[in-house]
Amino acid sequence: MELNPVRIHVLQHVPFEGLGHIDSWIRHRGHRLTLSRLYEESKLPDPAAFDRLVILGGPMNIYEEAAYPWLAEEKALIRATVAAGKSAVGICLGAQLLADALGSRVYAGSHREIGWFPVRLTAAGRRSAWSEGLPAETTVFHWHGDTFDLPSGAVHLFESEACANQAFLCDNRILGLQFHLESTPETVRQLLTHCRDELVPGPFIQSGAQIADIVPERFARINTLLETLLDRLP
Image 1 (cartoon, rainbow, N blue to C red):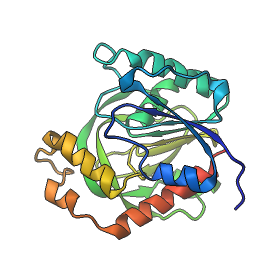
Image 2: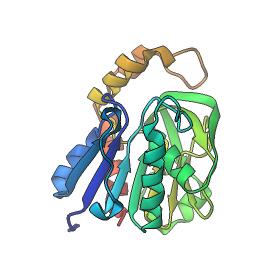
Image 3: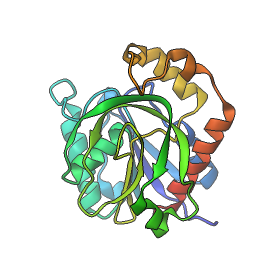
Image 4: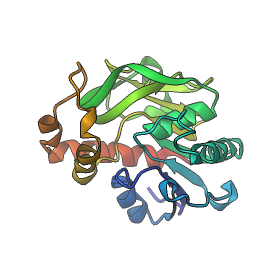
């Protein structure tokens, strides 16, 4: 598949949740990358400066504006990006921010989901032409406690036992992923280092040892799925 270079702008919330495999995809596709490190109070761009916005994860919640004042400006940029007809991808916290920008509620889920657990295509996902060729079920990496209601008009793509709304697609250009397809062994190690206190007993929380047991084939599968999804966006 021949792809035209895309101007991609990334919003990063903490130093230890970076691009992961997205960086490799950008370089191999010849896309252009700019980045705002919100934890360093980076100046945010005008939507005219990029073609696609990528919103990464982070340990904060979208409603913690008192602790993270930059959230208000970030939310305004995401709303402007959507209104301008741009493409956008949100991962974990990023998916919650996209859902919020599209008018949906974001709230604490029934379960925290941390570790390697399967997601499956929903009935709507199986019917969608956009999902053609995607696996009906695959094991992916999770690290989240909050969830969201599906935005109005969105295609509900994936679900899991712990969390019904795992992924959505709006207008064939806005993709929200609650799980982490960008994960690499290094990004997982970073989360274990900085967020280990979240590994409390729970039905959908694996131990640090289980998470740290790096299986290369798992990363290859999720990274390939990530590339497929990113390539399908305009």
